[in-house]
Image (cartoon, rainbow, N blue to C red):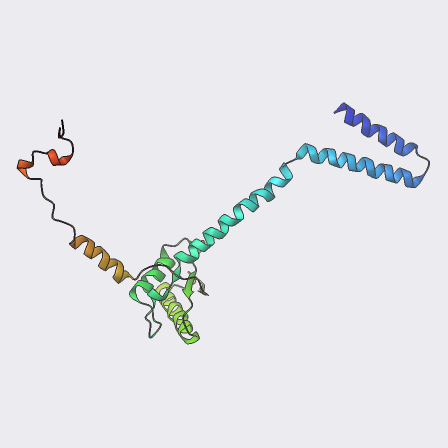
Length: 192
């Protein structure tokens, strides 16, 4: 530190001792540059950490937003194909978004349909159900937005059918035969 300070003081004295105004300004700007660089080196990396942290967090914020968009998505499975009205699953999903979803993520996303008329019928059905369900003017209805993100889910009837078939195909529990002697359990002394 004393070496730097003496170099700066020396440069300042030379700057004031010069006869020409232009050379004094040049020397003063050089001294200012050296002082600025010294100060920057002393506080490095603190000025750059905030920007670096923000750059690292930005993709996570986008992932969270996309996750909530997928969670609050009403897909083709939530609407009746002919009328565009909400099915029972769709009404329950809107109800969940209005009541259980965190307030900062209360937005309803409607998957775009094949035609404009069908898409507008879906939007109208969702807005009507949301306003009926909310009913209270103190809690405004969340925004309803069209999106092209598709849901990769299955219809509830299909999931239910698979679950019921799995349960019906489960064998009846029974104890092993008494004459087997437990050798089939794998813990016996077979082969010794």
